[in-house]
Each structure stands twice: as structure tokens, then as C-alpha cells.
Amino acid sequence: MSHRRECVYRVTLPIFLLFALAIVSQAQTFTTLVNFAGTNGASPYAALVQGINGDLYGTTFQGGAPNLGTIFAMTLQGQLKSLVSFDWSNGAYPNASLMVYPNGTLYGTGIGGGANNIGTLFRITPSGTLTKLLSFGTDGGADPLAGLVEAFNGMIYGAASAFGPNRDGAIFEITPSGTLTTVYDFGGVDGADPTATPVQAPNGLLYGTTFNGGAYNNNGVIYTLSLTGEFTTLYNFDYALGGGSGPQGALVVGTDGNLYGTTKYGGANDYGTVFQITPTAALTTLHTFDYTDGSLPPDALVQGTDGNFYGTTSQGGTNDYGTIFHITPTGALTTLYNFGQADGGSPECGLMQATDGNFYGTASGGGLYNYGTVFRLSMGLGPFVKMLPSFGKAGASVTVLGTDLTGATAVTFNGMPAAITGSEPTALTVTVPAGATSGTVQVTTPNGTLSSFPPFLVRP
Image 1 (cartoon, one colour):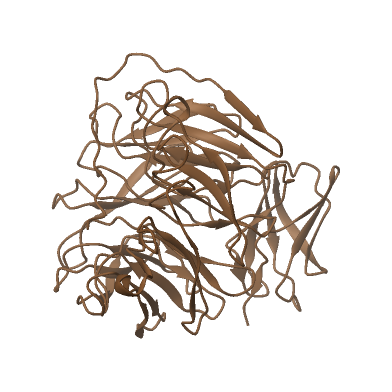
Image 2 (cartoon, rainbow, N blue to C red; image 1 turned 135 degrees about the vertical axis):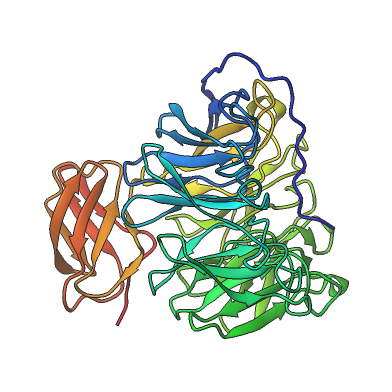
């Protein structure tokens, strides 16, 4: 099996049309916000992220002037602005989500281009100024399909799915200025082909998956890595025993302390699974897809403010173009939407929940021009705030992201008042107060009190 995402690029249309197609079904409303037209991007494969200006940022794997991929920004209302068209020298074919650093700068990777033709790492300002930080080489891996994550030590971690000494991929660490160090090289039996962004749990460990490798016929693994470099294979997937196979997306740390994820294959019907794993390696298969409710879940889940986990499948469902679903922590799955050709098809990434309470995502194909779409799913959930980063020590400066923070008068950390040192309509700069404990951050605004999700972690 292979994780490669194949694209067919069609003749670029000269126009771009933005329209909204709303389909209402009881509690949820699905709206197509953007139809990619080639010149402004094509084949979006990565989940969106929210910047400190409130806009959503994303990438397309193809499209743009040289047809090597783009970076774009979009308002929550669906107004799209193309920021960068890759030209090979600065990278090509961005496959992973961008990462928002606390100062608002975004970091990302492309799996092609650069000095060695095997990928680049870059940063970009919210307004669109891109700086290539490094070109990947065989010593640091190649084909960086995974995204990036900021860890407790202020370093940025990612994974390259190919090359390295064992040709099985590597985990790397970079400084914010772009100095790269390889911290672990996979060797096959401990995992191979890491395609998912590592995530950091409250215990300080990085948790991640590899699409291949492991002890059981190349079905993939779940691993942990400490910030000092200690690696452990936490779990080996075993297709032969009816378990999942090929975990392609990142894990998500639930508010209950467990981790949740998907496998693209395996399960009772070989259409993929949703699983839960404890930090001590006890894995439970929560759901096995049967094609009618979706097939081949491609990417990470996201936990919504209602406690459910939301995700997509790239195939299956009523129209065979994939689905959107949510699942409870105990495994009760509900299909929320079935994609059709007109509104987008075959989503290759998961969803994100913006601070307006709505979920946003991309479909890699379909839409008016068959180049993919950006969509919104409203579940009737209210606005909230996000912390950037989601952890910090007393005295640290952190950012509170929100949709409308104009006139905010107070911020508390689990009830402890905090000083507001900077204020913008979509972002507040605050200082973690002495004596603060982990929990909910609340912001008092003229329109009411907003609570943070997920909870903020106060580090000792």
C-alpha cells in the first residue's frame, strides 16, 4: 500500500468564482465557500489553520502560476486571497498544514523543490512574505509530508517520510530561525514512512504515527519521543488480527487525556478505523467503517467544543465522494454530510474548528472546476477562544485568539486574573499570572464571556 496522493491536473480556467451552496439538515449547515480554479490553486490536501488576524490559512498541492502549489488566506466569510505561488526554488507541492507560531508567523513545508529537489521548509508572514529557511537533504530526510508542531522547549518538530540513513524517514527538530537537527531515524521495525505531524501530550512526550513499518507486516506504528531523544514504539498495528492499518493522520490529545486517531485501511471491512489509545498503550478500536458511512479516513480528527471528534473520509458514503462525521469518545459515530461532485469530493485532510464555532475544511477535488473546494460546516456551536501556544509558565506572554475581542475587559486563567498587555480585534496578548493553574481561560467582552478550548496547560 502507498500513501502517495495522485492528482490529475486539468486545463486551467481563466476565471475564479466564489459562491455559497448551503444545504441545511436539522442542526448542521454545509456551505461551499470557495471553488478553486487552477490559477488560484488546485488540489488542497492540508487542513486549514487560523492566524492571529482571524483569517484561515491553507495550501494547495498544485495550481498557481507554475502549477507547483500555493499558499492562500481566507476570511471566515469565504473571501480568498492567494499569497504565494511556489516556483521550485522556494519549494513545491505543499502537502501539510501550516503551523502558527506565537508571534503570528506561519511555518510550513513543501515535498518538492529546493536546492536538492526533495523539499523545503519555509516561514511566511500573515501578509504573504515567504522566506525559505532550508532545503532538505538526505541527512535530514526528504519528502516532508508531515506538518510541524511547537514543543515545550520552544523548538519546532516535524517528520520526513523518506531518506535518512535507513531510507525509512526521520523526525527532525528545527529552531525558529531554521537550523535543523535530526533527532531520530526510523529503521523499519520501529516504524517507517512517517506522514503525520507529531503532537505533544501534557506529559511532555511527542506522540506520532508511521504509515508503514512495525512488527506486523508493515502496518504502521504509534511511537513516543521525548524532547531529549528517547524513542519508544508504543503500539504496532496488526491487520491480520482485524485491527487498523496505515495510520496516515496525526493523533489528537482528547480532553480526557487519551489520544485519538484513524487508520486509512484495516478493520473488519478494510475501509479504515477510528481508535483510542491511552498514554500507556492500551488501544481500543472505536469504529470500523463499512463504506456506507465512509471509507479511507485520510487525516487527523479534531475535538470540537461539544466534546465530539470530527473527521472526514476520502471515499464512500452515499455518493462515493467521502463523508464528514463525528464520533463520541465512546465510539458512537454519526455521518453528518455526504460529499457530491458539485460541492467537493474526496477530502484528503481533516477539519479545524475556528473561533466562531464553525468547522472548516477542504476537498481535494470536485466543485465547479473539479480543482477542489473550501467549505464550512456549522453545527450551531458558539464562539470560543484559542490559546497560542496552548501551554506556558507563569510570567510567559501568550496570545488569546478570538473572532471578536474588541473591548475585552478581563482575562482569567482558571479564575486567576491576568494582565492584558496588547489588544487587537482578533488577538489579545496576556501574561500568565503567578499562581495560575491549568484549566479554562476566560475572556470578558461586551458580548459576553468566552472560554478557551482546549484547556490551557500551565507548566511548572
